[in-house]
Length: 61
Image 1 (cartoon, rainbow, N blue to C red):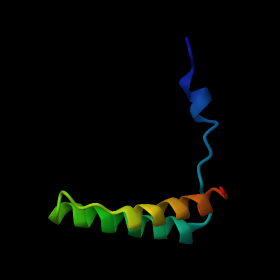
Image 2: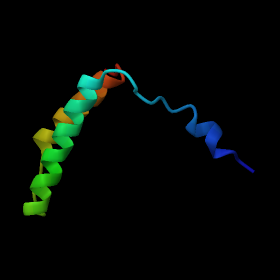
Image 3: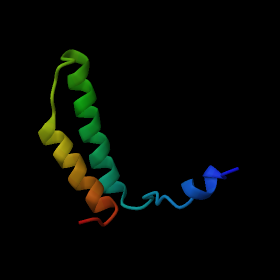
Image 4: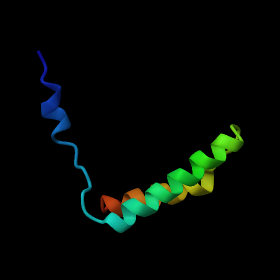
């Protein structure tokens, strides 16, 4: 039997950098708010900003 928690425990969780996490939260909330009023809303610019913030959060390139 595979212990899935062994694998999950290896996933890094960003705990620092509250400022970046807050910016991500703001962008996600903008998307959700727009989706409520317009279900067909497409947010590639906001999604790209979120991607860049996640890269910063995890020091990715």
